[in-house]
Amino acid sequence: MNALQLIVDLNKGVTRQGPGGEAETRMSIALSGLSSARNLKIADIGCGTGTSTLVLAQQLDAHITAVDLVPEFLAKLEAEANRIGAGHRVTLIAASMDALPFGAAELDAIWSEGAIYNMGFEAGVAAWRKHLKPDGILAVSELTWLTHTRPSELQAYWEREYSEVDTASAKLGVLEKHGFSPVGYIALPEQCWLDNFYRPIERRFAGFLEEHGHSEAARALVEDYRREIALYERYKAHFSYGYYIARKAGD
Image (cartoon, rainbow, N blue to C red; front, side):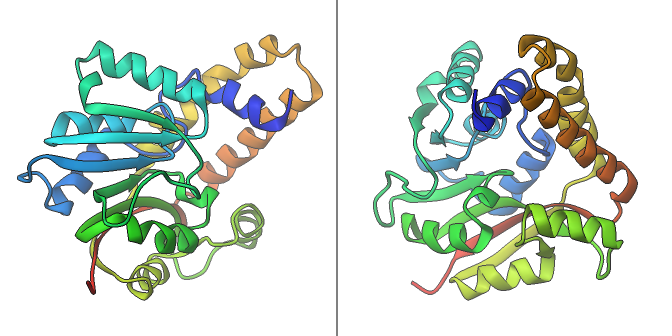
């Protein structure tokens, strides 16, 4: 089994595939100004099992196109959307975020929680802009430094894992560079990491290892997660996900 399928197997048993929270999604919706709009067309890119998709479907008068590369995640989202009576508001598409099936100026908003790093923040911001209508909303969460300086161990780890990690001011500058006007910024609080993501993943470790016969690859993946969790617990004052809400400008 390849590394990607191992990650999918570990994550398909939890609600979230990255840090976040329903309250933070609702806050981003409030900041976006979309609550009073009607018949919105929204894409949720890298939706995973769809926690943010379902909040959007319940909070807005909108149809949500949920895009993810992993069919297992989309199947779980479909089942939950149908269970809560939101299936008619959600369309599922298995596709890569760097080859989106949308036309120019087709969307009122693009959401992407904890996923744009797969493409790179700047590349994603630049590429996705064309799909938004004039004044369309982009709402993404992205790994962000919370302090000007960081412990060297933490700096080295995240620069190795994701070279685009930077401060909020730098991320806002990228948005402005690519034709967006920042509307709001939220730093995700501790519970979005520990309660909503890391603790559920930790509870999956034993079953996951058993399912995969305690293979070397499975054990290595679990150790990678344990290392990341330990770094967060030790250095959480220095980094989080920043939730960025911006409006397409200049058209």
